[in-house]
Length: 513
Image (cartoon, rainbow, N blue to C red; front, side):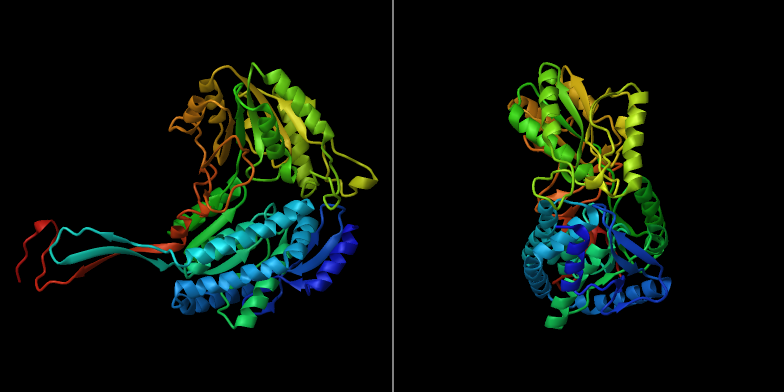
């Protein structure tokens, strides 16, 4: 389908007008915000124009979110979960249309666009169950006739600042979990993907209005410099979850920390896969290729480095080039396409610049690396994925380029492979392909992978929502979604109760009155 025509149909079906308010706090409004265009990277079509949030809009949103929090925190957690369950059910109904909006706005394939909405549905199911499992602890007291326990209280209005590459699912990781914890949520989407956020919020709004539920979700749109700075500096927002670049995350984190606020930072990933000579090569090839190519290399979990044992290096790289040459690059709305466009011209320039820098530092481009031109690549955002033979001393391999560039390294010993693997400042996702239990043990040991995610015989790209997602080092150290990440959205409270008729003091202290 032709992108502009598809967009027109979807906008009409979802009630999205040509000019859309980008602010929601129980109602849609805009008070003098600038207008931005949502432009498809597929062919450059302007999908819609968005009236972004002004400072007045922002202030109204925060006040609304604070007011709603005071009511929402009194709702029992299982009742909160019921709202999220209903939102998940509504997302099921709108999966196809919302998924297409994702594909149109950020250039994901149809399968990936649908998968993004499915992930939101999965998180809704997870959060619904979690609403009955916000457990505390009983703690042994050293004082007679005393009981100590631990409980968790809602934190307050939180802010979620999301990136273009996952324009809806990352919001749900934070928002659905935070909601069952008793928090309200202010969403600031990427300026490169505001339409997806508006479409999702329209679906959420429909459920809340139908159930006459608390208006716990709000939306603000605009530049990170303007709206992001307001959020970072706002004492009323106790937690900011940010997904984006390391430099931006560092600045935001410092501002929030200066007011003693909390952050969940999901920043750059520079992920590597170690391929052992003892691996199943078919599995390793599929894992590395998909990890490097999916979403045109625009995932924080994209495989950017392949560290291959010297005994199989030539064979592995030869097979990898064959896979790359067979991959379809083009319109992501067409069946069979695996690699769609980069998000914009800046991303293309970064792709070209990284390749030039790698070559200047001694890297060898052995496949791809070109910008595609012609009728089928109208937007100018299409590139052929690149394979570059590199060495660990190169500076460029320590940087994250948000594009389909895979650096290739040889290694002799596993110790050498792990040293190369851990030599970058980022620490999000990692993988090792091996059928040797001792190699697996080394990779998963304390001196093995230094990343937040460690995978064996599966790739770096993608993660299940049941596990805590996040990384170490300059990736930020944040955790979202599964496991006990819910604790980040609440405040811990240690409770002591005296059931006796005297007042014994801790540590045996004597005090008379």
